[in-house]
Amino acid sequence: MAAIDFDRLKFYSLEVLFQAQISKSLGDASVVVKFSCVTVCLLYCLSFIPSVYSVLAVTPGFIIPPHFRVWTLITGGFIEYRIWNMLIDIGVLVLCGQLLEPLWGALEFLKFVLILDVGTSLITSAVCVIAYVATFDTHMWFLQFSGMTGILSGMIVAFKQIKPEQELSLSSLGLRVKHAPSVVVLGYSVLCIVGILPIILLVMVLSGTLIGWVYLRFYQPRGKGVKGDLSESFSCASFFPEAAQAPVSTLSTLVFNTLVRLKVCHKPVRTYDVGAPSAITISLPGMDPADAERRRQKALKALNERLQKLEQSTSWPSLDGPEGKDGPQSPSAVDEMPEIVVDQGTSKRTEGMPNSSSVPT
Image (cartoon, rainbow, N blue to C red; front, top):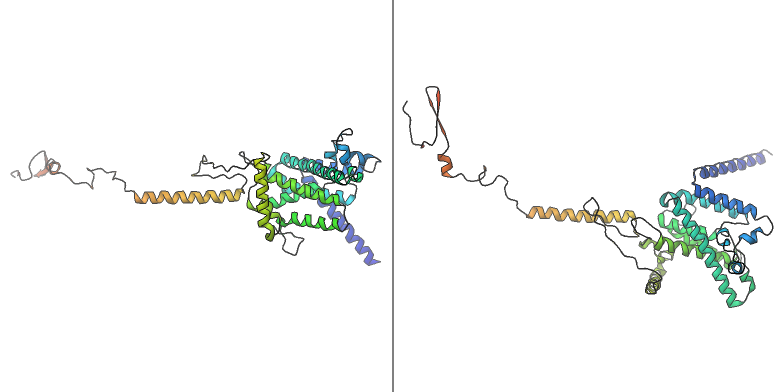
């Protein structure tokens, strides 16, 4: 009996600590994170009311006229019908608010969440419509789906961007944050193939991952007119194993160049800003600030070395002039110098006298 009471006490203590940690995190969170968490909780409670879930969840056949339920593109991403899904959504939102919002700002964070929400709903609905056209299965036309699966997948892509080399604390295989999107997609693929999870969740994960990468790679504003992140560590090939990165890089470059020719995308232009107060500043769009600072320091060092070589190879004229102490003195100047003759304690000044003249004493 004593052991049972001790286990209950330990369980209650952990529960109280967990609730305190969640309460503290929510208390420190911004308005955007609090509003998102409240929306998830509210929609979860409303899902118990009959027919409310069908009105708020996404149904591909009801988005187009005559039903035209366009609001489900937003509400579908925040409504959950399982309590553990709701708790996971709240925990990830709080974590994203602590890591991403200080870097991006509240407005950019909210915009990213809405882009993932609406984009995932549209792409998943389009896949269902294509499947209906191909198979004439009415189940795909009236399939209902909801949840933050796509939003959370896009958030993981953002973590890969800001902290790619940080190790995952729950992994003993040496996995890093940059491997997390690939691991999530692989895990959902296995679970959906074996039938543990519905296949629609895999479509949502792939949609959220793709939308998050495209927005962060090409469209997210980063200041001074710069958009996107063009670093090699955030390329499309970086989401695949090293053995497959070379062919994936070739294929992704071919697809991107084709989209540029079709004027769907714009080729990024690298600009150099030399108008800074320091010697030289190089600004490359889409590159990491640390990488840009390293390039700036390297260019500044090269410029200073060139200036030092130029100073050493150039002989500057003397500032004393030809009549200074280093210059030669003319004979006339010596002859014209006054001479002082002392006669019985009296000083006598004679000017213009030759050196051979003598004064009788």
